[in-house]
Image (cartoon, rainbow, N blue to C red; front, top):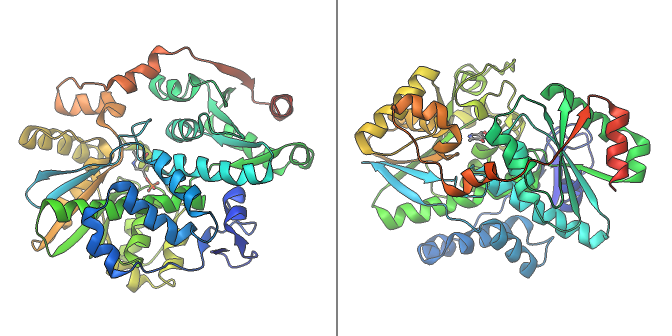
Length: 433
Ligand SMILES: *Cc1c(COP(=O)(O)O)cnc(C)c1O
């Protein structure tokens, strides 16, 4: 399968190139040139398949031409080494819990898959690859844990010293092995600038192989379609329904776009709802047809604090730039911090279910937007214990932190201090290759 750029000004490339490059040279996003419709017998037989079984079939539709089946099955099996259960919250509303992976957030799925696929391609070429990632907190943990112990790959996580939470810092500074945490004396923007300079430095790129684990990478983005099929299979097992709507807490729109791909592949979902916090650029686009990216504002659902969603161009491309076609399949709602916090409290009191701020946003969008003849699923993208202070302040009750999450805090921090200086950063990279 070949991949083209949404900007249509770059050459089409192989899967391998799309994965190693990440962003296309014309700064567009790579799209697969075909999205295969899965056969009816797959959907008929899905009820007897496991999460892994379903995901292997979906993975084959995208990557089957480029990776031997045995290898691809192993990548999928390794990636999905945890459960993704669908649970009933109240009549007509179900939650897909995407937070049972190593860092307790849905980004584990994409990061783990990408790490294994990149390792496969690196082994073919027999050269070590250095993954650079700048993080303001959550991406660093998913990427570092996803790549932990993966052969042929070394990861450098750059983060702003003193500007990430203790829990976030512990998730990428205590791992050791092939993960190097660089604690930068600067801001997140400084970290990002250092990474960008590294990609543009000719001498550095001649000496070592660099790549990014950015969320726009096709190997991080496409695997997120797997669990939409799994959600449907579980819903069929649990209840009778005619129409299904799925609500997705949205920031960069990667998760939602993966769902739209699943629909294109034949998943019988009627429509999607994109839940926004106060950063509602996408909701505004759906309502007005105008896309006005702007600076983000801080909210309690902070993984959705995005003012210029990077996957927006993929949605435009998927629907041939038709605003009408897009609004046929997607609607959107937005919520303030107060509304999110109240929802966490009310759902906890009424049904005993504990939401995290992102899932709460998606739940609210269903309460407002679900039609009476629809059965609804919302995606819970993070474990509530990752947002302990916010959730406890909402419910007024202490929250139990899972042992595996608390365990990160027990391990020794191993970070390397780095002044905000490109030459010193370069020395660190070369010295370690
Ligand atoms: C990244 C993230 C989101 C937003 O997902 P996108 O694919 O960027 O839209 C939502 N919730 C959590 C917890 C996240 O980490």
